[in-house]
Length: 597
Image (tube, rainbow, N blue to C red; front, top):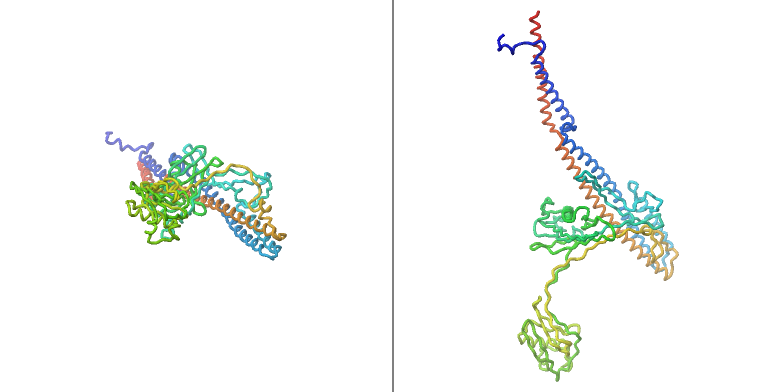
């Protein structure tokens, strides 16, 4: 048998063609399983064996997303509790305003105070009912029981507001803390309770949307234009054991990468830009900026206690830029002033009939000495003195000015005001100068000189906040705490027995107490509003993080379903062809069998 025919040997033991076809068929089947799985699940990385690195990263990110989702739920519950307490405070402020009106009407002579007390009692009942019903998810921050036996009470309610995983894998949570002890209205505890230390806070004087830079009353109201020369330069000083002072500059350069449109910067983008600079300069978890319930920029220290202080002041803008006030303005600049001398004592009318008054005056290098006597008086075109025997200050100032105008001293004028003679150089600034010798008759008991004043640019207006130490305070709330001046609380006011002058004095004191209480509850509402803003901002941020994580997971493990579907169809065709090839390969043995028949 020659070598050329070796390949044509047919073996009954080994069917090479069938084995090749079978191997191909198995390979196609494996690929078909993978493609089918990707189409049905939508994932190209389902298990660690698909891609260990991507599977590990995606699993970690999914875990973080679940944690962020839980944080978002916590923020939702916290927002509900804050809203409930805030609405309760607003309702009670209206009740207190009504209560004050009732107390004021009780001051009317002859009115029946017992009947007014009936109305007051109804208001008191309504306020207590409002506080008791301000309950959200089992939490009531307006009507509490801080007794030591009540283990459910927490003076500071913590709302989980953030989740982060460090480079070493450690997980940390941040919280928005609500000081219940500062906003509670009623407390069943009559004993003293511990109060938590507070952070230092600094709040701007004006809502952002009310400042000129955020264009109130225009089509773009609520947004600021930082594409030009507007600049917000701030100095932030934190004292928390060490003193750290940093400069924050918000302008077109620093805002470039932080906003979508420099011509329409929103208030939240503005605050975010401030926080970015704080993190870069001081570091995270030191100071944060936010908008309070009134829309003002608020800075708050992370640390608490009496050793914490925070100062935020405006600074002078960079050369070529314009200072934009966001509630931390500089004082108004003071222009340069003239050189001015005022007599040390009052002027008394003088008899010039036989008196010569020697005077020496100089200004900016020009000096002149002269006398004032009767001729100067008669030379006045207009006189208001009763006569030369009693020359008043106005006529005396006019006489000296006339003499000066006839000399080289042309910038200095003499005036009489508030009983004193004064000299003023019309030039301004430090180079302006004026001098007068001692003239006792005019009230200058010694020689005097003065220079003009330099211009003073705007200087920072102090905005400082201090933390407070922990301690103890009365266990009652704002409405059931007894006031020392009236010896009663808002909840226990009773005017039915008040009469006479003493009764009127007590009523006046009660009106003042209600006014003070309204201010206290308004402040509590402001604090809650600030927390509400924090929670809303954090909720929006957590939402963006969850979406970003979902996108990351999709990039790592999601399958291209269209591509995989196309592959699936191709593999199904290959499978059919492989099966046909296997069938043909197996049929070769049938030919050998036919030969043996």
